[in-house]
Length: 249
Image (tube, rainbow, N blue to C red; front, side, top):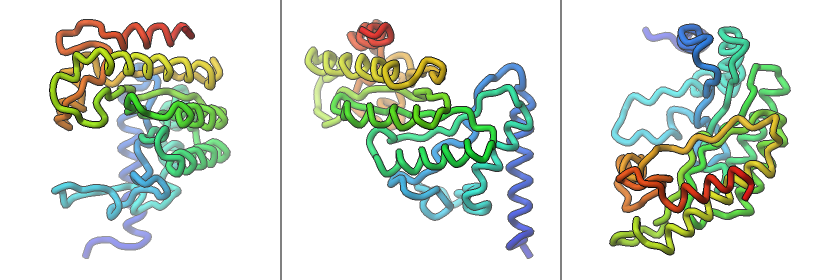
């Protein structure tokens, strides 16, 4: 018979520990930062993912550590990663933090809990898949709350959709949309520098290079142009806007 109860919990715990420590040890001294916990909360944001509330699509083999180990899985994961490489930065990362206050507050609460328990967490990552109409106030609120954890803060997956209303036609060459996109990239960079103290800045990763490579145009199949370079790898207005923002301009 398959294991259940405490026996099952022990098997899953050991498997997670072995996975984390094998991977971290393999790249010790080469990789300096890890997303130890990635996307732990449901899309709604109030609860941690489990095998039932995690979108499965057509899959029937969904396996979520938290389903078997409970909320404590997060503390264990960081503890195991820290033991393997005490010098690495260890992040918890999630998305929609600038668009869902519920998710942001749950995420921040868990980050503070992990920090207080001395698990080894050193940073929080925000996947900012934004658009030209993302709320500036919500962006400010997110950076302020993330910075208030005292942990490093990084933007882990930045892009800005210029076509959130899914207009048809050649939106990628619309002067109006390109200007709005540049303004959003500019604002995000400036807000990051304004609200995240220098010692806590873990960096910014733009999620792709050219528009034709973006997950939004490939995986999602959207009519959009969310990055700093167009499909021909020519700098867009967004490139200049972002660069100026990084200079605080």
